[in-house]
Amino acid sequence: MRNDKHKEKKLQINSDLLITDKRTYTVNEIQSILAIGKNAAYTLANSGLFRTVKIGNSIRISKKSFDEWLDNRMLE
Image 1 (cartoon, rainbow, N blue to C red):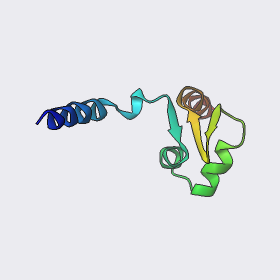
Image 2: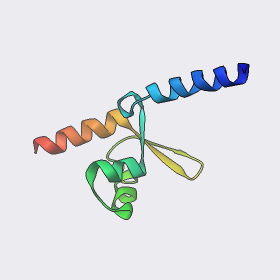
Image 3: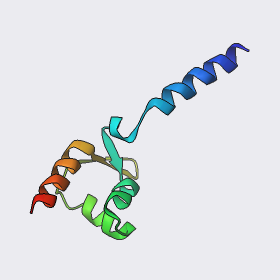
Image 4: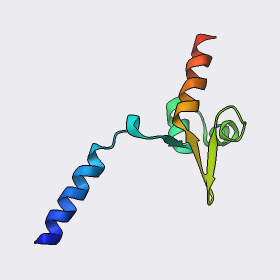
């Protein structure tokens, strides 16, 4: 019973985390946001246009730097 309460609390915490609360995007999220293909998303992530960090084989893109880049692109 104690274990079930712990699981419920953990699920509540996870469900409260929205994409706007995240500090990074995955390449798949960038792909979805921009409606581009997987290869284009990886090329963009590796382009140096915004801050990224590599964790193992995964690439995480700084949400702040990506959002700033996207906002500037939309103004052009």
